[in-house]
Length: 253
Ligand SMILES: Nc1ncnc2c1ncn2[C@@H]1O[C@H](COP(=O)(O)OP(=O)(O)OP(=O)(O)O)[C@@H](O)[C@H]1O
Image (cartoon, rainbow, N blue to C red; front, side):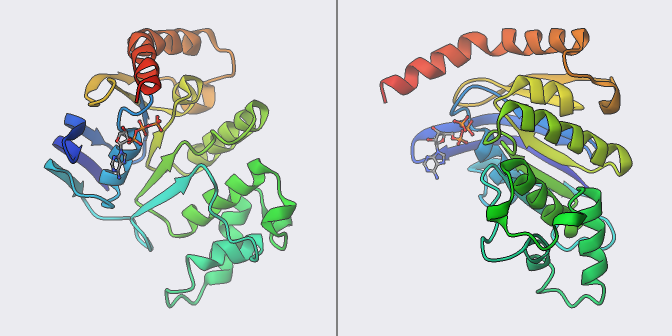
């Protein structure tokens, strides 16, 4: 299933947050959204997920969700959002329990294996590192076989080494079974490692400044790769002045 934004403008009261944003989110690819603080990245994700309706324009879902999909648009947040009293397997089970499924145990085993969590099925969140908690959140999202994963800064609560490991995990996951994701991040290194398509928004009101396509297969993108560094520099060049302006603007709010 593809998602499409058509000339979307969104405002809160009189504040225009996004202006005339048109965007395709093609299935089987990771679309990253980058832009200065407060430019409307999370708002864009909420619009794509149907949590809010745009003030103007339209958000469309094209095609049908994959077979066995229990929740077409599934979020992954920065703070993991795990229930502390449930085990790893129990947290994954949570999203399956309301559906009359005969194969819950098999689904849980499958997603825990895909996220390398099989040995931790009985652990509680408090026993896990931040990186492991986020892997549980990813496993839980995969369990509903979503059409599109909506990922809001999923790695930004983690230290840089854990971020690298999680990026490797996401690349391995996608390479084995391509999924569709919209991935909001501040971090341009993450965008060039994970994004097939990177959408650069301007400062608020966020407008599409540029869309960068990276053709290098995800599995061939290496930490410190010169071509990726150059892409990152290009993105930073697009954002730098606006990021500084957005930063200064926040000081006077
Ligand atoms: N529910 C809301 N009501 C009013 N204003 C809001 C609401 N949600 C977001 N905003 C405002 O809309 C603007 C865009 O917010 P949003 O969180 O989408 O930006 P962002 O690019 O994700 O920000 P950041 O990079 O800091 O995470 C901000 O000025 C924010 O204060």
